[in-house]
Length: 357
Image (tube, rainbow, N blue to C red; front, side, top):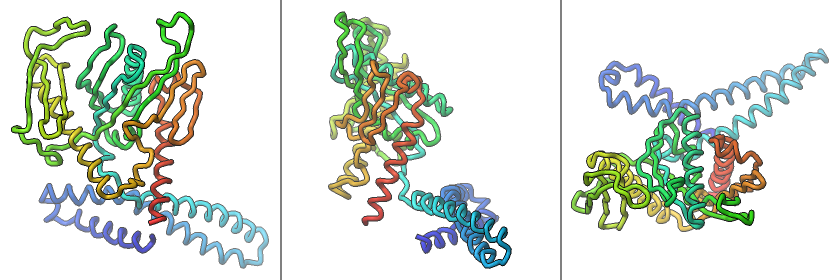
């Protein structure tokens, strides 16, 4: 590991030299490339250099341990114990920083929430989850744009809702939310007071750039129709809603949130590009490893990942065995603790796989 870190430090010093080169500074695209690489390596190098300083201080303290002064020796012994613990923590941090980075971590994301089993109750919970993610995004300073929404029969919930979340690190924080979210509560229409179980599916897709997914216009069938509200009532007198079908894959995206057909088409194409990118990545990962060790429990669409139990005020994440009793706070968007615990868990999984290989 430390041989690799020395090579990274050498490259980091080269980049610092290049970033002060007048020829590089005058070429904006080249400068930006080097600046990004330099930024990506900064955390690793700062942690590595902190580790080297800590080890150097430990070596200096070894000299003090041979002094005749008892107080000086005792002070050096206590400091060495702290430095040893600090060095151990920094070494663990370096192992994590050296793990292969997810190329999508800094991307914006599409969050797709769909009501599953449970009818109207599932649709109501889909609305709760949409609000939870929107409030979490707001707490992070991210922007949330509604892309498409299909209301339930009563208009109080969502059959399906798609939102674009824009902000630094959005995918890195939300990528483990993909999967089946189960809710247990007494519906407002339940006269017997019985607890019902419903399910909602969440999919988190990184936003794809044009260069990452090329869509041939000849592969698309585009239908336009009038937007409708719940109950089938027309809410628009023009054919502004857009349905795009990608013929090779059969993927279908519908968008009717905007009054402009052009805007609906643009939004639908963004969602389609993200779904194609997600599909392409899954195919690549499956080809690389049938066991997909790096994906263990990370949000398979069919996997029940979390249960929200209203009578007990309990939320359980089944992948990591985490249970907390602050349901109302979580539904208000305070999900950072769960996300941080998930990130730590999957980093540990990745370290284990890395050690085995």
